[in-house]
Image 1 (cartoon, rainbow, N blue to C red):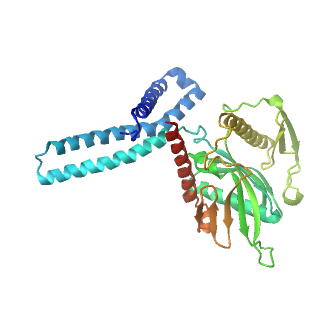
Image 2: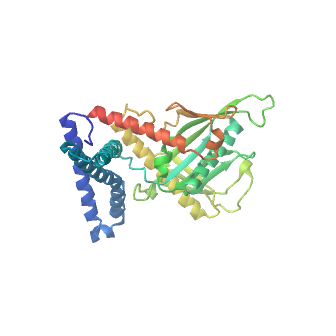
Image 3: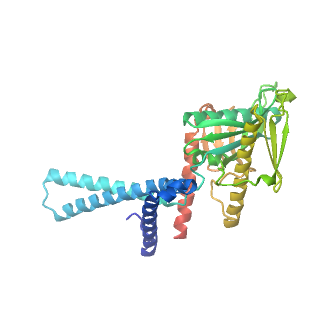
Length: 372
């Protein structure tokens, strides 16, 4: 059975869920052909996203049913007996292969039935800020930005800097950038939190290891249809852009500062020479921050005192340590240690991210089974 070895009630509950998903899938397929739906951009986009999310589950269920049928037919032949030795061996092998396939598909279907994160398919806004450690923290913030940029490039995602504040020595006080690409949020959402670095700074004459911190925040990029800003709630100021150490860059007031009056949230952007482009970028960041705040408030209300092992990365929580003298990276949430720091800093993050995603899925599966 797809549904494991639970009692009848649990099986029926899971079966009902699959029937409901199948009905929903077919309903969406019909609605996507409706001219009224096609002419409604938001409705069409939302339905297409849902249809795309459900497709892997439907394909897995179809594959399960095919393997189940083949398994039953092979078992029936074996039970009836009277087979030639060579043919019997072939049927037994087919039965065994399909049994293994059913076990694999059962696990896959259980994972696909887990509640989906509605933001998984979205682009992201990433904010990296240097924390404790002065210039050394700023230099590591620069290194993290490079790491994520290289990871994005390897996945053929597009990176765009929205705001950048640098130090005179080439460090990064703060950088805000957008990553656009399939699966960007689902892959990088667990990067939010405090990243700790242990290394000997270039300016250290005694060879002592210093510890510094950098804060990373990963937010789903909010589209206008996700979060509509009331322009009356905004105070927009212009000022002259300046570079590291106050160096003058632009003689015109092209930099933009937007204050969201109801929350006091402030976003600045001075990366572009065009005031209009800076305003668009600042609004994109503000909209995403406000959407994240709204979603976090909803999550806190629904699930106030329950957190998964991996979680979404509390910004005040130290999630990872990068130890350069030992060439070691440790993710404290799942106890993962890898001695591949050079490769990781060059954007080879998949082994780390896969482990985080697997741990998160295991927690969710465990919680789902406990509820049944």
